Length: 383
Image (cartoon, rainbow, N blue to C red; front, side):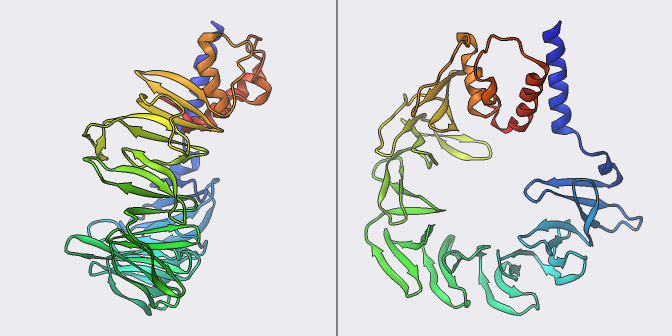
């Protein structure tokens, strides 16, 4: 009876915590929470049928607005992108008090991070404008990035079915014409690629960095992806910001670094179509080190990285816990419970004070700690 009661209370607590909205949301036509900004966008429903939105805090207090459209946040608390709904979508920029900064006459607009300038789309092309409407970069591009990196802004043009890439300087002059096949930004290095050659872009312009390096792409602080296409299926690996090999090209698809390891798919004989993703290699997963050596079997259906060299490996619906850097101490946990206990500890659900004496009776306080942690860590749930 006690177990049933605990299970019922636990389920009710989790479901209400995840799905319930604050009561004040009922005062609005709709209310959407944006966790990144810890704010709500609230839509009013005026009698005249017009659209009016506000920004509220977690208690429903109005912070900014009203705005004549839906709201998209920027990196500046005093600037919001406002857009209309429907087929004739129009976007503009408004201050926090609801006053217009840039009129809603663009198909799309986004703020350049850390600057009061904007990439805007008009007549299917993008350019840069300031808050006075001055054109800083002509509307000649298919894409403009939302941030200067290494003093460069990535741009592209679409020509004959192919995207070509280049960079713009902070004074809006051209650093590299958009004529390259691919790009990569890693740390303090910016590259463009053409005909398997890498060109570095910097304050002194564009210069050949390395010939015959193959296809390389990515945007990160540590590693870039490189691709070798010698056989029927391309192989993926990682290089550092100097384009030197970090992990050899052995994977059947792109992958992410997991601490001192990487989860890779190998053994693919072809691809299968996955809805919403496209063609996906049909191989199996394993964990490798930076030398390309497998540290686990490479026949798993799925592997989840849990941090600190720990992985949950899944095959045929069964889970296996793997700790590559240090052995796990099970204490007095029964064998049947070890997988669940391990997952709970690795995700942070089970705090340090409860990681021993597993056979002891649980107190109300301990149960509440586990319940709250389960809610806070629900994003780590493994099927």
